[in-house]
Length: 141
Length: 398
Image (cartoon, rainbow over all chains, first blue to last red; front, top):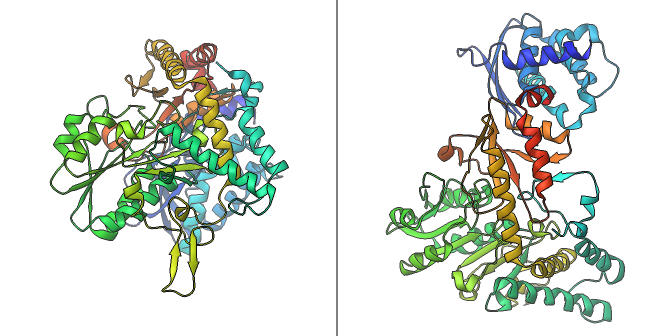
């Protein structure tokens, strides 16, 4: 993915994020995800049905990288099983750590492939994924 | 001014985060290195020459601090780890024993967390009330508003001398005069005040004061708790251990040392204390009039250049310190900070630990520029040039 495409994906998802402040009912599982070292703070709402992610929405305040990554996560993971989502998250983490990863799994998530070079923004990109991962693990108990 | 004194400024960096911590001049760094290299013995163990020297230097610094804030005696100067510990000590060691259920403590919404959370905990524990002195339209505290907020239940007023987001200076002298006429104690968080203006605790008639060394060119991990002697006598030591006791045989026979030693249990942060002493000498040598004047001039220069920028929303047009808090239209404050970081400009984004200020200002997060005397007009020019171009900010913030 070239730099300009990455930039377009990030900016588009930041300025027009999917499912921000969308209404959710009691059937959604809520997780808060925040960064200790900065001010990103999001509530993510996930609707699970028979191990499938049927819907995700979010609200809160966060930077361009966090908000766009949340939107990308929503675009990529609605309709996926929990197992598929965990695999996606694992590959995303590898990418942000600068390790070898499977880019075919990540789709638009590849827009963040340069983040590993910016230490202080890694946690911004992984913020929503840490939230979703927590929600999956908690609901799997 | 005095830029050559700061080793860090040899790097290509513009440092505008002085309210978080200040840079350290070479003399402070040298003092700490000298202690660790040449006489790193413990204090209060003067049986041999090295330790005697440490003792002398340690207690000489207490005298430097006493003179610096014009306390009336050395017993009123207690070394802590910083303003946070000082404020916690005051609340837990003194007010927890003094206040009773139903009593009221007044603070403001622009206080730093360290002057809010200790009171919140005490409120839960004792059933006291924590209420707020209203801020005026510029987010200032006026004596009139203090008078309106005080009730027959008010036993303490605790507020920053200068705040860390708005940078407003509180009329401390007027407040203490009114408070004392009404038997109310005044606690001052001096973290943002002591580094920038001359503080005379007797003239201001402050009951308790806390401040940090690292915001005034000193090392991290060192600060001061000042209290009037007759009040400190009633401040219960929170930490018990070596150095602070006179003798003990059993649980009923524990005798503590006099002030201030009994409030400094354990081996103190000796290097920190000595470094703080050096920082005080350094700042006094420059002169607080010069420091305050330079900060004022720099801030005015910055504000005058930011005001014409339509996409910049300045939160504190009025301020008494070198702080400017602002937002760029439709851009999250952190993204602005990341953008400036690309040009080696250090600014802080966020709520700056003043999490209830949003209730007054209506904005949760801001970008904060905080100036100190070693900043320059050229640095401000660089900053303003980068902030002038909205499209550039949007393009480069990610």
